[in-house]
Length: 313
Length: 313
Image (cartoon, rainbow over all chains, first blue to last red; front, top):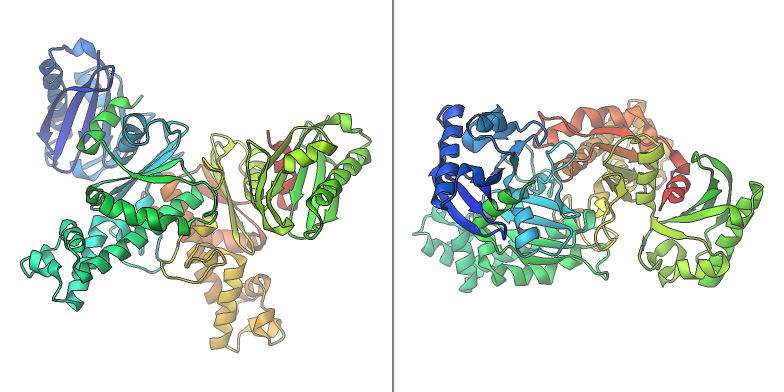
């Protein structure tokens, strides 16, 4: 028997078949096709699942369950996907449509929640009972694990740390509000701060690395320039770390999980990110002389989505 | 049999004996005596418990359990009170000392958590499984109920919504950091904003009500003046409501409880506070077109501490 994990991403949909030991025994992927009719999108995903299973030398009868991680929200009760912008889905009966073609248990969750679950079962936060997983990507995603289970809220709309207000009347956010946490802690924030800094300090290595065009500055360029000792990039990265440390302090003050896990693009900076964060965050915790959550980096990488989705139950 | 609830406050310690129906059948209180030796403080509390029980016509044998709500943190495992500034307690073996004099089960919790529990069992949030209780007082306290139980965090230091960063580099906080949520949403914040406003608008009714001395301005004065239509006070109160609505939106985005309950001094403004909050908060929720937590006012008032403490188990 295998469990199927499906990771619906911005550019591709990845499918993996996992054995009892939660090892990926086969996987395949298809491109994200936003503009196709819903029924065709689901048909392609089902076909990809069947292909993956047969690639593992198994038949559909060997499928125990199917978990789907989506960048959006779904109703656990009805299997409806309420919103998933990447796929153009608004209130689509995903489970129902899927089971017309492949009648198996289908579970759907937000992708950050799924990654949080994966890390808490098979990754850096395994053997912990509560954790908050934060993805530092284009936006900020987050997943909360409490007593070993995903807490996505009473109405299924929680875990959106990125839209906690971090600066009243601050930067405008894509959500329509101002000062959301993801405007200060995401890769996008790091890029914005890098670009702003080069307008004041045009001699920065960041500009050289970006072929003299600030619009070419990426999070990697800011991090690489800071790592190389460029003063402007170092200032930007230090400020970014201070913001992220305050965000982590806020999570601890409010929720106090056992561990906080950082994932997503910016976390690829490794100890260059983790070391300053670890040095900074406890000062933002109100009971700073008490035992508190450790901060660590995610370890499952790109497979977290498949693994966590397969773990849904 | 009765359950004893003890509410350790800033000026007094209240003790109540509750019957099976969670009705208070007897109560008494003693003043908070910060400067006495720890053993004497505990002796006075035990005496007050015994007096309360005999006042109900009962004996110590009739005591089932003793719950204590403190403005601070305690270890559930050891019964040690780690910090309780009001009483001058730092790492004191409260349960141990108490049981030397009265050998009953002793449970200790943070007072905001205790009030959250009380409301969720016997108050406005009864029949809900998850809630966040926010006290709008001198500071901001908060208590989280998940799956019917207090969630005070893995290390017991959670539920401190007041120290979530709400404005990067904002107002200095008593905790040593800047921009904490309680600097914008507490009664103290309302008073500060009122005082600042009168320095720009000396014709405000707030000053008249404060005998022309801005230092006499209280939260009640700001609210009463706003209610009476004073333009300066109305502007201040509107701004306060916008901040609080953003705080509530943040709680929903991150934790998504079934209900959010407002208590503490400012909540005495009743519908004058609740109506604008209800009109404002959903715009700060990322999935604002989905079902989300209602916001309501606490109903147990000053007895919440005793009732919730007695409910601890």
